[in-house]
View 1 (cartoon, one colour):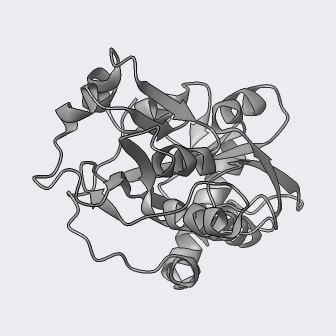
View 2 (view 1 turned 180 degrees about the horizontal axis):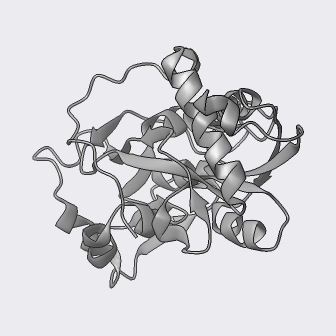
Length: 248
């Protein structure tokens, strides 16, 4: 009965903004990915269809405000007060990735203040105030919208550390190995410095946001969300900090 109360008066095509360099979460090449499929399934459960729109992560909230899209994925309430943020639908587990054996005693978060660090775009927004404060005055810190460029800098000797989600790293690693770029992969260490980050979908329209939440609840209850995740994301057996969610 509660689901029927939020069903739309008529089906709509919902344009959803995704980052263009976050496969296997969202793949700009074929319009698929775990996030694309979860969001599509949740909106289909309440009668809507989805059209993925790919863009740099930093543009997603602007595109939402300008009406270029009706929703934007992989965001948190801190990304903007002028939107309705859905329930959490996915977590990312980021790591500090370094050449294997370079730091045999491991790394602490504070070490990133002194090293050549290349992170993904908006990392300082999503990894918490301690991380942002740590890298704020590091002149050798940078963020890249294209995550393949992160790997090229690591394997090309231009970075000591890259900060990336492990599944994204492994996808880009395969791309690099198959490319004509001169950088060649070598073994790496994954430093578990970060807590998993919870992500939501941002909507301009409150009713659409509530409909998405209803659809998300349904596909979670029916096991669809778990099956989608399992199809794309293998279980990574590494020591990880307890999950937390960024706050505005």
